[in-house]
Structure formats: structure tokens, C-alpha cells
Length: 268
Image (cartoon, rainbow, N blue to C red; front, top):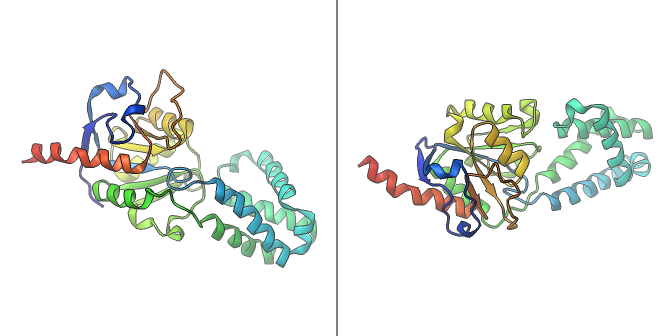
């Protein structure tokens, strides 16, 4: 992955300039970006279609292979069981894969199916569907452009698998809340990503759709921030604003590309 630094004037982009927010950090002018951390769900692809499908696919698998569990725990009942287990194990709520397996095991035991035989195949049916994503139209071209400029790291609370999805080649690494042990907006997960990149937080730009977990969390950890606001919402906070406010990943890639002439001139 390239290790160059990219600088540009904050809050300037091709299709988001009219929505950009001015703020204390964005008034400093140009700032260096030596790496980018990216959220996944609702940043690279919409999660709602996935969430709707995985429950149905898992229930169909159970109906075919564990009919007693399927009958005892239809989708709504399985969701209620998972919520109860989440409440009983708050230290694991960021570990979606473990909680899914625990839910399947509890459901199978209660229904009379053998979890030692069926939990892992059931989880695999769920996980395969969870990683069948439909990218936003701009995602794949923009990822290639961004990765050509600076190292990218995936930073997510979810359990998507970039290798299964087929885009891991664009990323230096993927760091999830499960592996780290704490979810966004905890400062520790952002700082762990910066440490792994070997780059100071002030030179890392975090990009994500979620105001609290992505923008506020990254800002509090000392990273630069880009709010990816595909739906055109108004920024709700007066005291903290994102360094960049984009409506697409294409706009972010344009922003980085626009920085190159200034850098090339300085290096000449």
C-alpha cells in the first residue's frame, strides 16, 4: 500500500460542497491525510437488506435441518431469545458472531436438537448470507481510487468479512470490535487502528455514516473525520463538526485527487 501523505483544503468536494459544515477543526486549512479508516455497513453497502435476508435464510436452514428448533423459534422468537442473551451478557454485545452462536445453541438445546452437530453449520448458513452484500454504486471504483492514494483500514462494529466479500485487496487490514474487544465509539479501537497503521491519529481520516460511532468517536480519539452522508441529513451538533462532509465515496476520492497537484508542486 502507498505510504504517501495527501493534503487538501478541508470541506471542499465536487458534489458535497453545498452541504459542508464549517467548524473549529475545519478552519485550520489544509491538513495531512496519510491513511484512511473506513466503516463498512451503511458506508460501503446498505445493511438493511442484509439484516432482512439473514433471518429468513437462517430460519429456512433450521426448518430443513433442525425442524424442532425452527418450530419452537420462528424469526421473532429467535430475535427475542437473542435480545435476552444480549442483556445477560453485556460484555459480549459487540461480538455479534459469538452472540449468534450462543443464541443458536440455546435455541437448539431448548428445542431438543443437538447443538454440537448443528450450531456451526447453522452459523455458516447465516454468515454466508451476511457477507452477500450489494455495494453502493460508487463503492468499488472509489475504493480502488482511495487505495491507490493512501493505505485503507476497515474499522467496524459488525462482523462482515472482507475476504469473503472479495474486497480485502484494497485494505491493509480489517479491525472489528470483536477482535479488538471494544466497539466504536470507544477511542481505543480508533487508536489501535492508528497504531497498527503506524501513523499518528491526526494524520488518519476516519470515514463513516454514523454520527455518534464514527464521527464523534473518531474526533474524540484525535482522528480527522469525514461524515459520509448519503441521504442528505443536516448535521445535528454545533460544538463538534466533521472535517469533511461528503455525500459519496466518489466525492472523497475526488477530494484526494484534487490534493495531488499541490503535493507534486511542493515535491518538485
